Length: 296
Image (cartoon, rainbow, N blue to C red):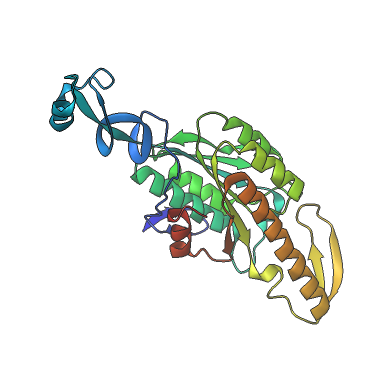
């Protein structure tokens, strides 16, 4: 187990969270993913004339002998390349919700697992923590170094958002990631508008994106059927008193299901895959399967 301790608690996550990319990495840094560039080893790619692949160490005798023009041929192999991975973390006020699970502690677990797994196979991992602006404490450029990782996880686990803080800087973070294709995890409760989610996905369309939706059973499912309950909107700070009843509970659940279905439609349209939902506790085997099966 990897442990990232802080003054609040100790975070434990699996040591290995494998991920598979459906695209070829364009970087030159050696790694564990299929690359675009030919290299000295790895998966066989093709056979080409020596003039196209000037490496006489890899001459293919059979292909050379069979060529009527007497040309020499060499085998080329794919270079295994390293990818760049980022976690865009929503640090808006609603992420401070504590129910069946502490939402920020769950976020810290996810980031810790992604960081450890990325480093193990040579990928560079970075974090951008987004509220009204990108917070300096959670602005980490992608690297293979462990420097500051323990403190980062500790700070995430103990972070409490400023009241009424939004998530507008997610758009700024998406713009900062422009360039070579990356694997991007968006960790959020997605309590912002669907129009904002659509704009965010559009800005990330050049990347391979995994939206991770954080939900909690105490938000709706575990509410009593009959009771007078006060509710507070963490984003606006406003409160309201509701007479909870079965019909209202069903209506809220239906609206939540429809919202998630619409979010999945946006994700599939932009990235070809559905979002991954964390319901209170992280299902690590299920999340691993989701990442390894192409998230289709």
